[in-house]
Length: 262
Image (tube, rainbow, N blue to C red):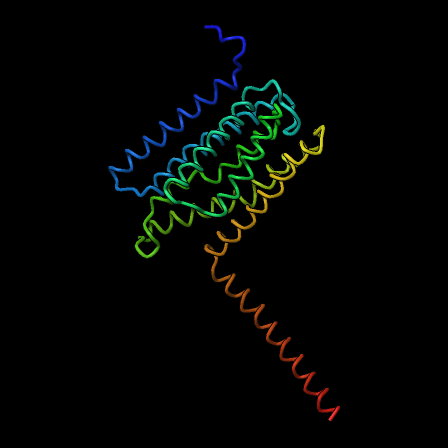
C-alpha cells in the first residue's frame, strides 16, 4: 500500500500514538474499576506502561547507533526510531497533561517537567530536527517503570513488612536511576548544542538539558531523605549545633567588647 506523496511517516505516527495512549488509559481505567483503584493510581499504572515503552524504544535506538559507531549526540535525520521517539514523547506529554488537569492531579514539579519537555519537543518538530540524543532522553524514563507498583501499595501506616520492603526497593531503584544513570544520559542533550546552527537551536538543547537535571537533583534529595531519615536527621542536628555554637561565640565576643568599653 502506497502512502500519499504529501504524507510522511511522522504525520502517520501522531494519530497512531494518540490512539494507543487512549486505548491504554481506557484499559487501565476499566481494570482499575474492578480493583477499586483511584484515578491517580490508574494514571500511575498508565505512566508505567508508557515509560517502559519509551525506555525500550530509547535503549533499542541507542543499541543500533552504538552498533553503527554513531555518537549519541548530533543529528539522526534518517532514523525512523528517533522520529518515533520524538512523536511519542509529544503525544505522551500532551495526553498526560490533559489527564492531570482533568483529575486535578496538579504536581508543580511534574507541570514544570512536562512544560519544559514539551517546549523543547515542539521546537524540534517545528524546526524539523531529529537529535540522536532523543534516544538517551527516552532511556531516562526508566525511572518511572515501577511507579505503577508503588501506586498500588497502601498508605505507609497500613503497609505490611513485605509491602514496606517492596516500597523500599522501588525507591532505591528510582534513586539509583537518578544518581547513576540519568546524569550520563542528559549530557548528550547538552552536547547536541555543538551541532546547532543558531542560538535558538542551541537553547532547544541547553535549556531542557540543564533544567531537567536540576529537577533530578530535587527528586534525588526527596527520595534519599525518605529512605535514610536517620542520616539527614543527624546531619541537620550537626549543622544546627554548629550554628548555635557560632551564635553563642559571637554573643560572648559582643558582651566582652561592651564590658571593655564600660
